[in-house]
Image (tube, rainbow, N blue to C red):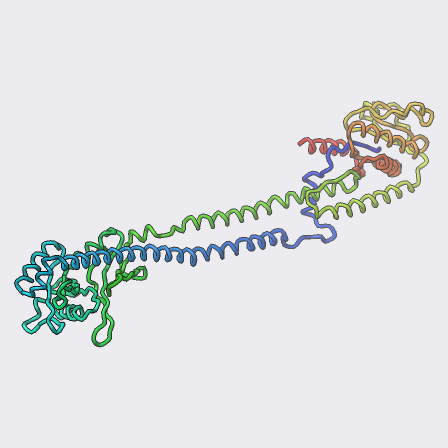
Length: 508
């Protein structure tokens, strides 16, 4: 008995796939997993540069940026305070010089009287509340101050040296010193009478350095520690530094920045406070978050490839295998499988043609008598004696339940009409089911299948000796007519299962 059914789906089921994985015929096996190895290499090629880049950002670039930011802000604070101190010193100097040119001061200089000078000094102090003391030192005929009877009210040798240098025409700078446990700063300026050239004097003004400390608070004490430092050289040539005014609080260290006060030996040092450093700190949490997202995305991408690509490859391979014995167009999603699919199809079709040719050479038996079910009854007990005694027959059945093919009109004399039953085609294998008749029946089935939109047909046979010949002619004729054939071999009931299974797979 030969069974023919429609192939509802070209792809094999999961059972074939499972068998292909577990069985290794001819010693074919797999060692390792190339996809995972390549994926790991790709992941390493992606993550290593990313990690190196973020290591550079976190360990080198971010600290450098933060240091530059601290440098810029701290230097800006120091420069601003240096400017404030310079402007304060300049304002006092200009006011003193302006007061020295007043008529009252000039009259005292012209008279050179100690009483007049004392009165002028007292009067001028009323106009300078920030000044601790103001002294006008007359210059004698020799161009120097007379210190024969004392220091003329000067506090120490620093003020004496200021007067000496000013009297000699030098441009003096303010000098800070410690006197009676407090820091003072003295400035000296030469004052000349505009009309009496031989009468001139040196004016010495002293301020309390608390005035300078108040100037340092102008930018806010919370910013950090401001210190006004005076640099000088000892007689032994050693350079020293005195802090003459401070304001605020902050650790002195690598973040301390300096700015010189123009026209003086002073400089401003600024040490940022912890509060200011906290505002200047560059938060690296976003950088770590971005790094974590990149690593997660890379791992997720690798996981997607390792999970989805094998599934897609399995589906493509199964499609290639299922379509190996077909002539219909095949479209693949993995271009690398096209060459394999072509070679497999050529080999399969070649082997199928050789198999069909060998089947046609099998010698036909004279007479074969088998018990076969009738058109509607499946048990031989309900069949007639004539049907049981018939020679070997061919049962062609469309699994969809459609009626069997009818003989072409006008050609009923070419074959016995009685072989066409309600649900099958049954006749004597030797005298009735000839090669030409089977070929014509196959062409008719191919035509009907085409009209029904069915491209692939399932073919199976039973164990009778005429089955290989009849199946060979049937398969060859169906393929010549343009149909694809799925040969499931020596089976009978499995034909219905295979047809039903293919239909379910396609619909689901």
